Length: 379
Ligand code: SF4
Image (cartoon, rainbow, N blue to C red; front, top):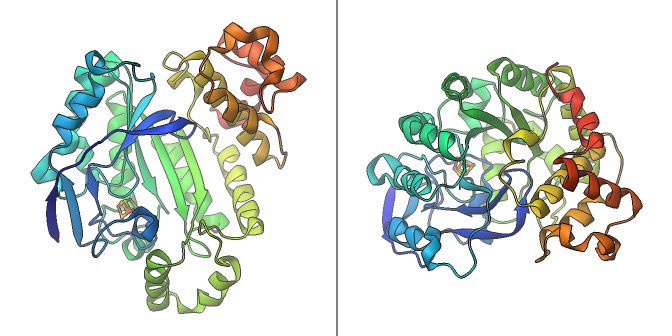
């Protein structure tokens, strides 16, 4: 592994709108590049400008703590940061990859988040996260914390091929159980499942069942993208070595889409498989409302719940305007409650959406949302 120490100009990445998967407006990458070297990692794609040999060359933002302190300190802000989870992980490098043992950037960021009293959502594939259970519990007591781990499968043998640098799925599930026992909310990101390998009904059902038995509070699910260039070349080389008979099937679903997406038909059938498994084992497919209702601003709460309704209906094959409405609401400057007479001027807001918005503003939830999400909750 080659480590390069660099100075970053900024650390906090502000999303243009609240992200309804992580329920977050802010994220960060403390490291660029990742020695976990998952075969499918899209951090390898040229889109993200990671330098050198991905998996071997790691940039460490050694001034991250002093820069982030400036960015979080409310006395230095004209406009205060929005309340939402600060997302720690994902992107172009795992926050708990091995280099973290030496630099402790993630631990020191958690200390800052505790100091400035923000909620945190940690996403990793590394069991090293247990090292920071003390701070995570303190943040949870103050403002709330979630620990999520990502998986492509619960099968240890397959994971050893496609995720060579990380602890096995069994160890990751044990880590989630550990945090649950410590009273911390936990999520699974079953993302991405690998086409024709970990996306079978049997494989998805097995993973969802294990997640349910572990007590995870939600699963976020998604298929794999393969962007042309370094990401696709690397993945296809691994596939050629281990499952060459699948190459033609991959060529049939990855047709060179700009975002690396497979065909819509493939994703539709995949989503249906997950939908059935999540209902069978009663695992929420989005973060439960109780984890964010008291954190978000009224606009962001409405936007996230509308997006969750849109997703839940999408799982049943319905298309809705709620996603468009969520998009325009989350970019509004003024509070929705100050424009009750003119909600319909917002893009995507018709009669049904207006009714939902009014109910959410009044009660903090929507009876429609509660009904749609009930089949995924343990009774
Ligand atoms: S752990 Fe995440 S960031 Fe690191 S290589 Fe794997 S997918 Fe990429």
